[in-house]
Length: 357
Image 1 (cartoon, rainbow, N blue to C red):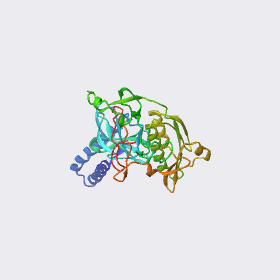
Image 2: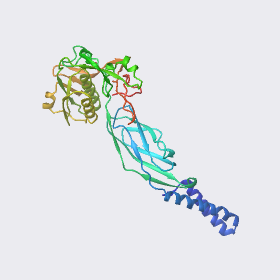
Image 3: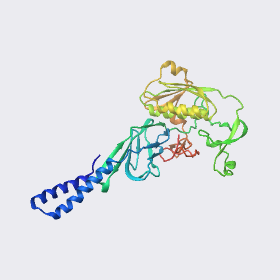
Image 4: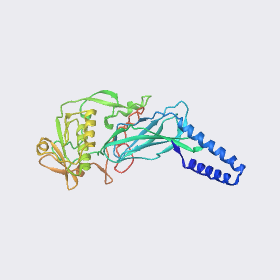
């Protein structure tokens, strides 16, 4: 609890007037000093009696580099009151519009946090500053709760040449080559190519439907190794892109990095596990034994990512689909807030706004 600059100015004026009145005996001056002192006392008492309100933060647990995440700060209160709200952010994440002076106790305070770097990013701790009468005094409540956001690396659509690498599909064979089994509701991780738009348009709730297939044959499993060295960002983006491309093609994908290993698997959980591993990837080198166990190895060569199958080595840029000379980012369903509804978005070129993975 302390005086604001306005409060200190009023206090200094009151003291000066008191000294002047004492020297000159001016009663008219005392008539100004008394309301000032009463106002200061009332403001200090008001903030002193203010109970500490609760602050609840709601934010997605994961995001993608360049993505803006919707964050909400809810301050429950019996009666709305004016306050200045701030949410301190860790490295690699920024937000506009904070701190914000507004009325709390009603609608949640929302802002967009933009992810700039992959890895573990933090939201919080929050601060809530309440001012007293006429803005003469204030008190600040500090909250130690910190929410972690895992920032996934950028990933890109691949369009590899037919002779690029053994085991890397060149035509992205989505499940349309299998036997049609019916329709089901869209789920996070489903490809936009499987959306049945005609049937989805007939649904009154705007929920999407995707085509479901029975696999005609097992497409096997591949393990992707990652040896980033010092250039871990490029390797993380390349390895995540290759792994998701294989998963889209119906291949079970395993992953081996200097810090962890994922057994071959498929589905949304495997996609999330791969992206999480690439988000946490550090600047280390894969051991020779681990590198030899991988069917495809992503490594850094002169600062650029290279993908090799043990016989051929191909620069990652050669595998990436491009549009007007720029890499095409992968599409990603929007997670939104807890009350949001996931929906697919178009892939975009690198360097533009949008929700991608």
